[in-house]
Amino acid sequence: MNKSYLKFIFAFIGVLILGAVYFEYDPINNLLFPKCPLYATTGIYCPGCGSQRATHALLHLDIPGVFSSNILFLPALLVVFLHYSIAISNHFLGTTYHSILDKSKAPWVIFIIVVLFFILRNIPYPPFSYLAP
Amino acid sequence: MSDQINPEVVQPSNPGVKPKNYLVESILVTIFCCLPLGVVGIVFAAQVNSKYDAGDYAGAEQASKQAKQFMMWGLIVGLVVLVAYFAIMGTTLFATFNQ
Image (tube, rainbow over all chains, first blue to last red; front, side, top):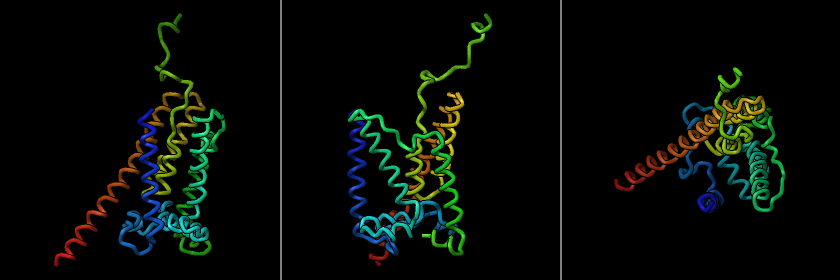
């Protein structure tokens, strides 16, 4: 029990430190931030490409910037945040809410969205090119 | 009578509980990390659900283990790339300053 609390505290501190770094520095053309290895080696945008820029934009409340870097970033973050909020509420407050991610078909729906995004953002013509980071 | 001679296939100790499908972790690896290993994790997460719903508890346990493996590999590869990146960057900078 104590071990899982410790994990949460470490994760929280880690997120705080990373948040400070990503707030202070713009990942574009900064040597501090590694490029995506898939993009660096193949030139293909993966579904996570643009997340560092999206993080920087989100911390500066630049919502259009978040969406233009990675359109799935904010929805994914919100779904995950909701999922953990529900888990914490159910654990500590004894509520019985259900997370959308616990639905039986949720992984397939997410898989289809991610794969479509993966393919479409690599098509170098508008409107698909707007999905590229 | 034959039922007792041939026992059923061994089931996990608690067939009523759905094994963890690591969907959230796989989504996080997909969005925050680099390689599409998180996507493979999502596929296994889907298999955990569909096998569990079909009553295949052993298969669901198996898919749960594989989902965890791919999610962990995505995480490990990401961390290795990060550490390697900083090592190369550090040595390069160090060499430049010492010239």
